[in-house]
Length: 287
Image 1: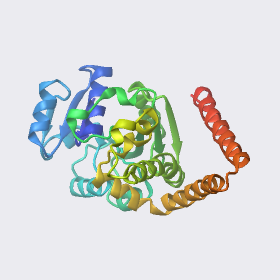
Image 2: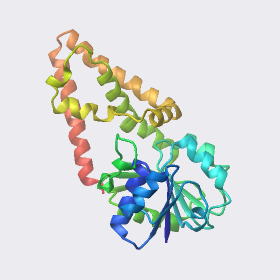
Image 3: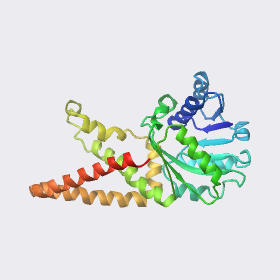
Image 4: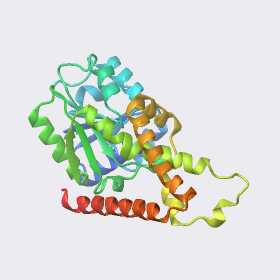
């Protein structure tokens, strides 16, 4: 089997490394990336077998194509190369939003391939191949957004494939549910992290007073500004709903603090503790 990565940044590189680690030289790994230096580096450390800065031969022989591109760039790439994909190939993406991507691409996806939209719930805050790490997929969630053109045998194969790379739970859902859930579990979390660190008084020597709480809460504030701006804009309806709900919860706690309402604060803390414990229990139960 021939597998092609489109984009060898942190996510594309992590996929390539995970595939190589799991399967060794069983599969031929190829990559298309605009940076020749990145291709050379990936070849040097045996992460890929072959690479090109623009497609010449790779798409024509790839049985599986994994896109690790920004949403808007991926659509342009598929449209430009739609007649070059191998018949029967499985294509997949790694983007964090699905409705706008599916709507933009549905008319340019060729009929002779099967495009399985996917979302690995893992990654790094840093950009580039140098930060690619196969271990980020271990025990992470993977979400597949099925469409009516997907073949069952391809979906079954793809689920097993990503499980082999270390993903713990594979969820198949629709694009609306995906975007609604991701707005809360991922995008809102990034909004909070950015807002928290940007609200710091610049005159403070904050580093002298940081503990694990601040480090944990602001880790994801190290943002890829180009990518995350796209993700926020393409999912703004669901994201804004979640921001409003978060503002309500924050204001409830703020009011309790202003009014020295210890009973109310304790009730909110008990609720958050119970919700967190339930989340941990679900993490154990759900396979």
